[in-house]
Image 1 (cartoon, rainbow, N blue to C red):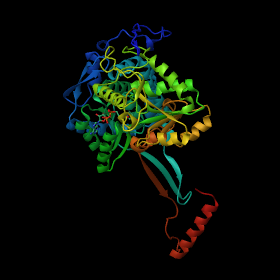
Image 2: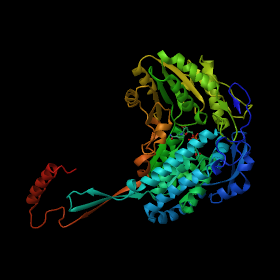
Image 3: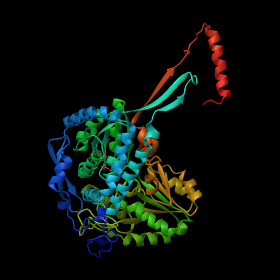
Image 4: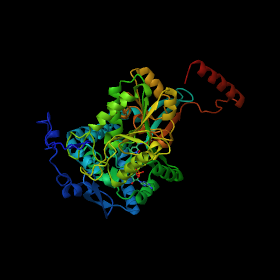
Length: 545
Ligand code: NAD
């Protein structure tokens, strides 16, 4: 492992405190990609992928090929939907309680077999093991939440009818059918299975197109969910280039669940609109953190490290803009910079590194371009600002910039890397308006010792989630509450009731008993109208809703 000052550390080869626990039994830090991604594993995980072509993915830690994978054509996507449609009928007829039980069993299997998926996440994304574990936590929370709350969200509900007691009304939640899910590479476990779980529990099948670079993680999740009881046909996977097979997924889906960049999200939305099917879009961000004058500067500095550098900043809810009150700015920047410079970068399949690699040359190039352009136009590098080819081809130091101004790209564009800019403010209203000065609206963070004031400021920020005295994990991890973006950051929400009801169609069944909703028993139209008028007044007086 290597810190950002270039000191080489010993390779972590064992985990303290974990002896005897089978979850952590593997000799961490000594495994290689070839030990983990064996031909047998790849053959097992990919055998149900609909596609006879061939593609490959890569390990960001080294840039080398990781696995040879099947590749699907648009025709294969058609086949996958036909298979999913067939399997969905039986699945939808499976009692809700049994569907929910699959999620709870999956929860336990994931926790038990975590070292397998942590290795795959690290190898496919290049992230530190601690950050891979965040994905596992998010998936477990989602499995528990929807496993336990599915019947509260989805069971038939009695509603008050137009004529109470005479009109018996039930609201049903019918599955959409086959959901098309398109996922990015940055959180391949959470953004594949984590988002699919509520679709499954609602009785849908899913045809998923994960990013090819992180397909093994999604396929591992599929294998374990099948072991937990999901019928194999209910989850189909296709692999290939987004612009080639992505539109085919949108073309066949009864609902589209998309996570990725805002430009691609717009294309997906247009495809869904043309077919009059619904979609949810979880898109990009340029997230702001506000450090108020009464913030605990030390805690805020630690929170900024988590917020800006988790998964090397390749996190949609990552902090890229830091607004700090002038009165605490010097103290904050000093502590934040010290923590950042002390971060350990590493490429081991083991805990210990504070940050891993960027995922690809494309992400690496964007980071270099944003930092170099800002520096050329007068910004100052407070910490980091260098590539680290000595560790791996796409490693880049966690970087703090000061003096960033428009029109530097890093000021307004999503970098999606370990780069954060400091802006000082004196007036809180001004800070709120600067934080809101972006078309995005995904996540924000406020730091203050006064929780009530923090929450009041949070409500003025235009972002789908706002964390007070945390960077992103408090809101994201609270699966009972909705998570998603305002403005260019998306449409619809994951988590909570919205996160599962979006995968359903509401159906109202109303049975009229004894009297019709029309003149009857010899009443004239006028007498009927008078009777109904009296009835409407009475129902208001009785406080019926
Ligand atoms: P991307 O838009 O390039 O790709 C996302 C997915 O869409 C991939 O599977 C890709 O193959 C597919 N795709 C590409 N072109 C397509 C097309 N024309 N039709 C259909 N599908 C297509 O995004 P990315 O670079 O992989 O991911 C990074 C972006 O995702 C960032 O902007 C990040 O903020 C965003 N993101 C958002 C969230 C969220 O929850 N809001 C979560 C993670 C990532």
